[in-house]
Image (cartoon, rainbow, N blue to C red):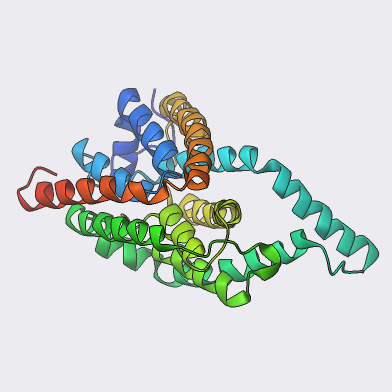
Length: 290
């Protein structure tokens, strides 16, 4: 039986969301979980695979739930850092005093500042950017650009800055890199970590800063999409929940792997994958295979 909110003349997105098979949703969940954190652009991969599956319109509600799955992975991996930030805020509020040596409070200020660019771009230009660039040929070009950004990260020679030496300008530049990732095919992870390394942040801090910065960005994007997304039918919920769980688990594994790769200095090697998938995507779009 169809959900009462479903009507035949509703937005086409509802029909496509209701009819999406379990195996396709599971694949999209896995892709979202892995590519959200591995620096190869989750949005770009979702555009490509949705086109391959014949889903020409964005699956907004499914996208929302998949992002919630990857958000859960970030919260679990960085729970210690998040708790430390919360304790610092509570101490500031409860005592009214600021500990000049509290690096967690300084990190929080830097994260707030770095979140400004994506908040402005996301609220003002997000729909226009996605409408222009969410087609395979532009995604392919963006993949190639991501590869270039990752390749440049290997030239980070003085990656030794700790939180206390990270400037407000550093934070704004990293945040601007995150704002660029609104374009499907530009990796948020790849861009923010690469910029952080080139600015001199040590590898551990660059990784932590990138993913703590992702939390408000993912929450904000999820809330915006939630308002625009058509409701899912009752029959589709099991499929959506399974795909969300797959996104959370695969995202957790991918995030732990990425932390190790960045620490070991192997981050820039993802450039070759991005160049390869970018060339394939562009070729497929030009010749009508995608």
